[in-house]
Amino acid sequence: MNNSQVSTLCQIRDIYRAIYEFELDFQQSYNLGLNEGMLLCSLNTQKYSSNELAGVLGLSNSNTSKVIKSVEKKGLIKRIVGKDDKRQMYFTMTELGRKKLESIKCADFNIPESLKSIIKL
Image 1 (cartoon, rainbow, N blue to C red):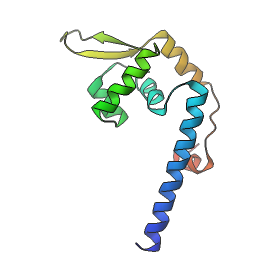
Image 2 (tube, rainbow, N blue to C red):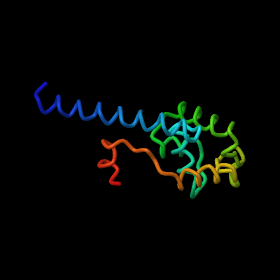
Image 3 (tube, rainbow, N blue to C red):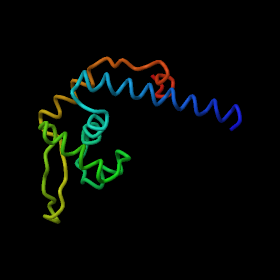
Image 4 (tube, rainbow, N blue to C red):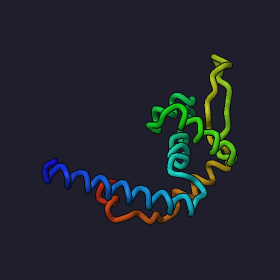
């Protein structure tokens, strides 16, 4: 490994640590994991099926199912049956989910410095 590769690896490590730190703070502030928060953001404007959510979130179907189950258990999303295919399930936010997302939108995040330049704040 050359110095450039080592430097890149160390920068990725620092980014990973910063994301982990952000996620811990987010969890404590909102009682939501980062994937749960991203799921709410995804459902803010439209409904999605489980497979569609997996693609939007960049998670495996198995991990997406776990996130859906957790957020659904908290009452933040609900299932609706597809109009054309009654076997198809879609997910939308509940009123409680909308309030939760609104509280997140209005908040000041404690974003680690190493992430600020990446997400262009």
